[in-house]
Length: 94
Image (tube, rainbow, N blue to C red):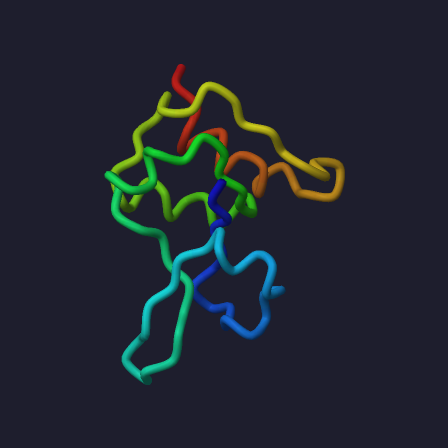
């Protein structure tokens, strides 16, 4: 399992028990910031957890439409339609 966090979040904002499921690097200010690993690493994960907006980072590393067999939107009733369309439009094939 991998958890995508927005690069704007800081490492100390994430519970310690979730840290093994994340990826971060030092930014220009030498502060750890979240990111996503390269495509060859990401394609090994069977489950990826993300917000609707942060999931767009996956296309930036080369994950193409149709790569995932299922996309679940947790708490979809609280998300706006445009937010839910980010993962649908970027990751669903067809």
